[in-house]
Length: 175
Image (cartoon, rainbow, N blue to C red):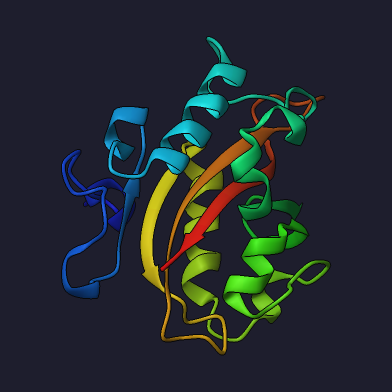
């Protein structure tokens, strides 16, 4: 049976979801994000870094190569623990991601943030699949739960072991 990640969104539903419904699914081309220019540019940059590989290495990523408008919305997550029991630690949270969410999770593990259980599950799916996803979700992990966010989360491979995901790179925009 396909996971909810596999059942994801159609290529035409990646813009804002209807009536505030939560949705997420795999991303395999920037065209799927046509309604989200900043997210599409972010994904295209990640894809360019990867080249013919499934995903770029951590060493390939330089935040200053991102579109300038994207930097305040970037979130970098470290992957700790085993593939079977991963823990995700927020290593960097852009200024707008902090301001818009009302929460600075820098230095915290995602499993310590109330309401972030769904985020934890989706991150684990990225580890398993080694494939980016797009999500349009309610902001359950913040006191600003009246907001929604859209994100693309992309894996970065370990420099020494290119088959292992060492970091997750995310761009988060809020509505």
